[in-house]
Image (cartoon, rainbow, N blue to C red):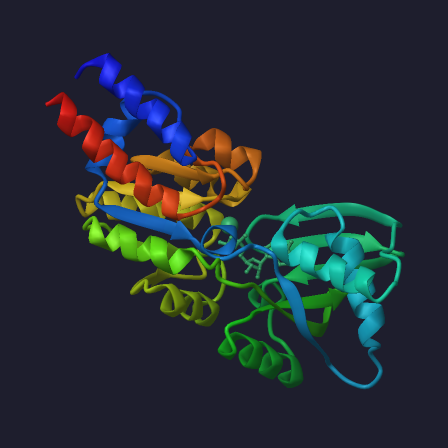
Length: 291
Ligand code: ADP
Ligand code: MG
């Protein structure tokens, strides 16, 4: 392969909005046959909003619970955390600042002491069995394609907060483009199966791996590689970094976290998935001129 052609390809990539870490990455890009996509922040905007709050009964004040949850989430950059903090701020309520022992549980949620109360916010399965009202609220939220998180005070589950995200308007076109190049798209997420399938249907993805913990993302990539596939992974989160490094080709969203950008071989500068399609086309064109 002539280094000049590879360098020209790399330069052309930069014009298209694709930063390529080294000329050898183009060769790797050309071999890919499967593209695994993270959901939140990659296929969706990653900007979540609170849709509803359901409490366990009349004694629980919805605004109080949400405020304590926002305190616990105030140090997290997760889209769910941002949504809860914004919901509290948008009704002109101060987010508690007396927050200690904050703990981030990647792919699960957060825990912290807020105003002297032990607060947990996270996946419904993080908190054990839920009272019927809350279990029903989780089912209702997930059926509607939302993400349900449970808020517990002093280990007692008191509320379910439903948050939802929107699909980027460029995602469906990007998925179509990947298919036209003969690549199989697979959606991979830590979120619940119903929310994942809802997004998959909207953008035209048939295969979904949902409810996957951060370690599980790496295992999912390795499983696909064992099937003999050459796997590209596209992601934006801290939770995606290990999977991006494991994949044969890691593509990070330029709008994502530094951890993801460092782990990727290639960065989609504008966070536009269509530029992933451009990158594959470019690698094929560049290497064709070399051979
Ligand atoms: P994704 O793969 O969609 O980017 P993550 O692995 O980051 O999702 O998170 C998986 C699930 O864990 C979320 O859908 C949410 O239920 C829960 N979760 C993660 N972080 C938080 C948080 N800071 N607050 C509440 N729930 C969280
Ligand atoms: Mg993400």
